[in-house]
Length: 258
DNA sequence: ATGGTGGTCGTACCA
Image (cartoon, rainbow, N blue to C red):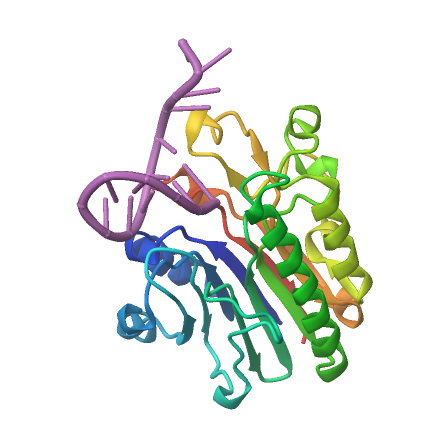
């Protein structure tokens, strides 16, 4: 049994104590982090090693940044930090192999506003991702694609679909890209396990959004189709969102029989 | 009231 988790921490420097507590409590085999906002030279490797986790990071100053924490060693020669044929200084991708499992950790661009330059960048980035995942799908039999997708796939993933209709994170062009990813041969692990409404992974810091559960489900763990019937559970852990000085995202967790 | 919160960096910027 393998537990894979993903958490947008919105600054690992601020959130490291919460991450260490969460690792100690939950002991996932893999934890993918997004928005670490740390250059690799400043990554807290020693603290995480002491907690029993191997570390691979792909970071930059101030913005973006992804990392993989793993109880088992990650094969160093199998680490990738770029989308092929997509020149991009923003650190948003980290792929690694852990035993029989290929893990791809993503921090998908936010997109700012539908129609903006950043929205165009998001769609282009998703096209480059689709090409990459197609290639990875052919190369690796057991694949999980995790991270902050910045896309709520369906209306039931949105607290107020009418208010959000057409907005960034929810708009049809983004959802279409998400469906194209799934069509490569992936399943949304959460929806394999849970059909409920009102299950979200992100809540705005403003307007007491978490207390009122005004959220979106934008953090996902996708599994390759062959693993679908081996997903034993997929959950969103809202406990860290209730702490003092939380990330605006909750960790998402999937358990896979491997 | 046409906002609001939070992280980074020391100011606008990003989300």
